Length: 212
Image 1: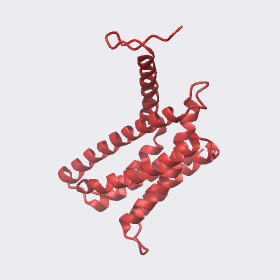
Image 2 (image 1 turned 45 degrees about the vertical axis):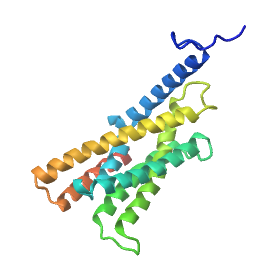
Image 3 (image 1 turned 180 degrees about the vertical axis):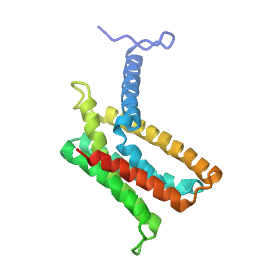
């Protein structure tokens, strides 16, 4: 009646069964997170990342990386809170607020800076705050994707899904950075024109999401 012991030669035993199950679960929910943020049908998060990059030329990529970190901190927090049923909001409300955050971010890019805080610190706080909203959107998708019986043990799924989102986010930011290099160094696009175009594009996408 005893469970078989681990045998490294043929990778048998309860340890390897558990490891294989864990790897499969990680891969499944990693793919869900990665594909969700890259899904053309869910382009709201892509639009927000566009707005995030609009104000900075390619050589200021470190600032974009810091803003991406703020966004990650924000959405990871609310994704976890919603995952553990600590924070819940109606899905329809979240889907309406997310485009508003994109429009506000785009408008913030083109208006004069005011206030005592340095502009970049303002951007960091704003991005983190908007990340809180996007995290609730991620959580609604994750909840709808859980397999039956997994609702009570959400930690592995939550972690895997979030890692997938981060990898997808980095892929998008890298793509925008490459396009920006071509625009600035080959196309000689002025920073002001780039900001207006990318911010306007992000805002336009967000407006379409608000239309019935």
